[in-house]
Structures are given as structure tokens and as C-alpha cells.
Amino acid sequence: MLPFIFLLFIGWNNTSWDNGQERTLDFGQRDPFDERVELTGIGEAEITGDGLLILRGDAPRFRIVDQDFENVNVTFSAKRIDEDRELSYQGFVVGARSKHYTNDLCYANTYYARLTYDGRISFEKELFHGHGSVAQYPPFDEPLFLYEDGVPEDEWIKMSFIITTVDSGSSVLLQLYVDYVQVLEYKDTGQWSVEADDGICNDYPHNKILFSPGFVFLRNDGLGEAQYRDLTITEEEEEIN
Image 1 (cartoon, rainbow, N blue to C red):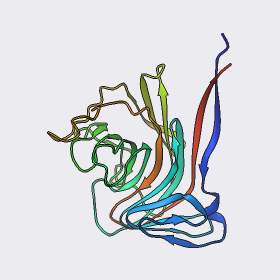
Image 2 (cartoon, rainbow, N blue to C red):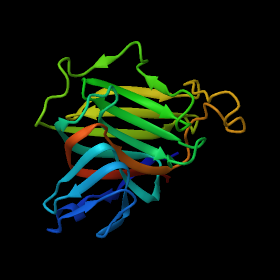
Image 3 (cartoon, one colour):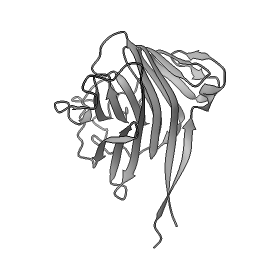
């Protein structure tokens, strides 16, 4: 039997950020130069036209929608500039395989990779929006710090979040790289517990492994400003010869 062959192809990249056209997106607006890009949440996204994305506001969500991504490598560089308020969950956060629509309580489905500004790295699985629990690795009471003194300001940091279905379709492998070094790995075998509040989403398959594809988004919170560049979403397609 011949081995598996893994083909990589670009699912999305930020070429329109470098087209010389400065524009700012507010809530619900699409990028006029890339209709797959949408801003939600609270804040704004400025695309400078010379390669930069600048997020500002209390809770901006920069989403690449209308395209379902499954096995992906989401890579970008980000720079911390300043914050309007201090929050434990603010920082460079990317969500993938997401169905996270604001008004949908029971179908928030998202895997997250986080580098929070206090220096912690973690993965999170969310199934419910605005209620119930989330699953985090490492656990909340066992934080893992990549930067003991917090994420430095005014310094580019490169991140890659890789999600792959493995073990003949029975598990999902999460990997996080920072500045080309793997700093975190976790395999979701279905025992990574997430619970809804009593009486809510009772017909929803709790703790399911998120095999289904979804959109990708960047999020940050409590911002004065954060900068991003070189965002790409590389899909991995498996073929058998």
C-alpha cells in the first residue's frame, strides 16, 4: 500500500492588505476588496493598504467567513501596542473550525489558541456562547507562561495554530507555534469536557469533538490598538494513492 500524501494549499491570504487602499471596517461591514472578510464584535479594523491590519476597541472580531476550513494552519504576526483596560483573556487569540455566531447560544463551536498579554499560552474549546463552561488546556489553575513578564510591547511575534483530525478520524490534534517553535500541543479525544447550564442546549451533543469545518477569526479585547500582518490560512488536504 502506498503512503498517504498530504497536499498543502492556501485557503486564504492577506494580499488585499497591501493593495494601496486604506479602509476601516465597523461592525457588520465587509472588506470591499475581499468579501470573505467581515468585522463583528465591538471595535474597528483598519486595513492600511501597506500590509497591516490594526484592531481597536473593546472586542473586535476579524472573521474570514463564507468558507469552511477544517485541517488548517493559521499563521500571522502580531504586535502589542496598547490597551484601554486590563482583561485576563485579552491578547493574540485565533479561533478556527468556528460556528461562533453572536446570537446562537448552543452552536458556538470553536477551537482557540491564545497568547494572552499576561504571557500565558493555552487552547480552549467552546461549544456554547454566553453560558456554560469551556474546556481549557492547560487547566485554569495550572497556567503555562511563555513570557514571565507578559507579552512585550511594540515587538512582532509570529504565531501558527494548526488543527488536524487524526487517529483515523477519532481525535483532533491542536498545535501552537510561537516564533517557529512549538510551545503547546493537545489531543482532543472527546474527553475534554464542556457543559451547558441546566436546561439549556439539552438536545446538543455535549463534549463532541469538533470535526466539522468552520470559519477562522482573530480576536482581541480591551484594546487601544494591536497590529497584525502576514495572515494566511493554509489548508491541508489528505489524499490516498
